[in-house]
Image (cartoon, rainbow, N blue to C red):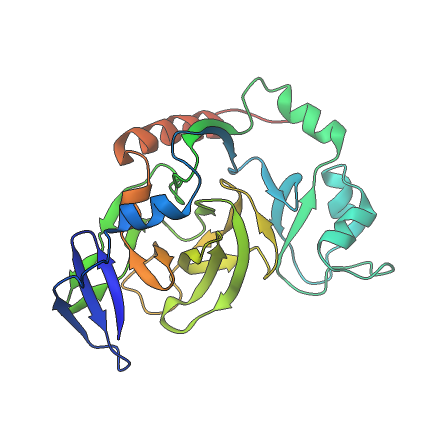
Length: 278
C-alpha cells in the first residue's frame, strides 16, 4: 500500500489505482513537516531570477528557445541572435558540419554578448528577481490562478494542483534539481519530473513542449517547457505535483502566497510585453 499525504489526511493508493480515505498511520507527518525537514533550513534567503518571454536559460547560458522549421539555416538563426555557431551546435547536439536544423522543433539559441547588451539598453530588467526562503518553491506558472486543488475530484484523488495556462505558456522549475524524466508519461502527457535530493521531486504535466533532458541540472526559475493540453485533460493547463519518496504532498504548502506572488509576476510580464526591443 502506498500513501498520499494531503495535509492532515492520508489517502491510500493500491496497485489498481483505486483510492480510499484512511486515518493517517501513526508516525506519518503532514506534508509541511515532511518536506521542511528534508530541504535546506527555511530561515536562509536566496535571490533567484525567473525566465520569461524575452530571456531564458539552458545549461547556464542566457538565450531563447526558438521554434524553427526543418532545414532552416543554423548559421542564419545564430546570426540573428549574434550567437556563437559552435555553441549553438553543441547545446543542441547538432553535427559540426550540419548546416540546417534536422526537424521542425524547439532549439536553444544562446545570446551573444552584444545581443544581450542591446536588450539591456531597453531599460527594463530582463529577469524578475525574487528573494525567497531556501526550500520554498516558486510558482511554475507566473501570473495565473489555481483551477483545481489537491484532493478528491470526480470520485478519485487529484494528486496535485492545476494552474490555468493557455497552450505555450512558459513553465519554470519550482526548485533547483536534476531532470529525471522528460517526455510522454501516459495520462500526464508530455511531462518533466525534477529530482531535488532527499527523494523529493516535482512534476510538470500536460506540456506542449519539454525543453530539458534527463540529467540536466536545473535552477529554480529556469524554463523547463511550455504548457499544453497533452495526455488526459479537460483543457489546456499545467498540472503540478510535489512528492517525497513517492508520497504525494500538497504543493501549496511549499509555495509563497499565491495572490502576492502572481500579482508581482503579472506586473513584470506586462511591462516586458509593452517594451519595444530592437
